[in-house]
Image 1 (cartoon, rainbow, N blue to C red):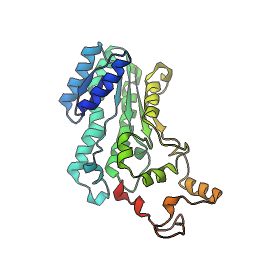
Image 2 (image 1 turned 90 degrees about the vertical axis):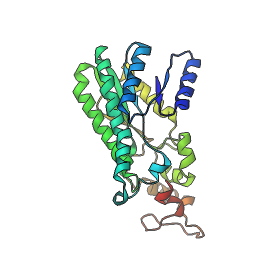
Image 3 (image 1 turned 30 degrees about the horizontal axis):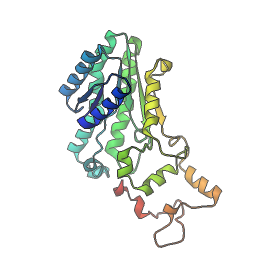
Image 4 (image 1 turned 90 degrees about the horizontal axis):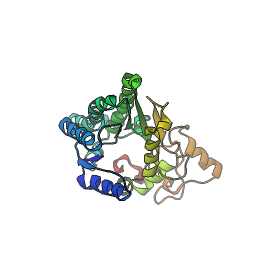
Length: 266
């Protein structure tokens, strides 16, 4: 089952799977609404005869949210509550209503999408980062409460994943700045996430539970000075670290901020 708040997107994915000879059902769901979550789970059980696997992969990431997710002192409490209803409570309620069906079948697997922003902090996006950190805690609790009953729960923490939405909204200079800190010299692709989730849901991952798996190209494993050390070794300075109209490079560690890297543009 493919469940999405965007019915056209869900249907597109379902049709692609059907064309490959697989059974697929598309449903529309707003995970901030518990009633719709109940209907989603019931539809899956009715259509496929049971429920074994759940991948929670929702997040509130519209421009109207991201543009207001900046300084903590300026945050709107109602907007933060809305972010938590989708990013955290939606995951919890989906697990709440899926787990009884999994227990009837002797177990199951729940994968929760967190983020590198849930592991490390940024100068912006405190609402998003806080919600993603909460998902890591939720994952541990599901694994602990239901592990002995055959249910595994694992979180994944993606880094820079070049989905169409990211490609359209994150400036190229910002993408380049982030990729300087990746140990794999390319942005992540949606397939990188899909392959990881497929493995974690499989029997081959039967001994993995309660943990968070980074899928970030090594973004979160090194010292913050990694990119600068590479620059020093090569004797070069990336173009986006050169001030506009100034041929001299910006020295790492100084207070210069390139206009293309202002937080407001994320």
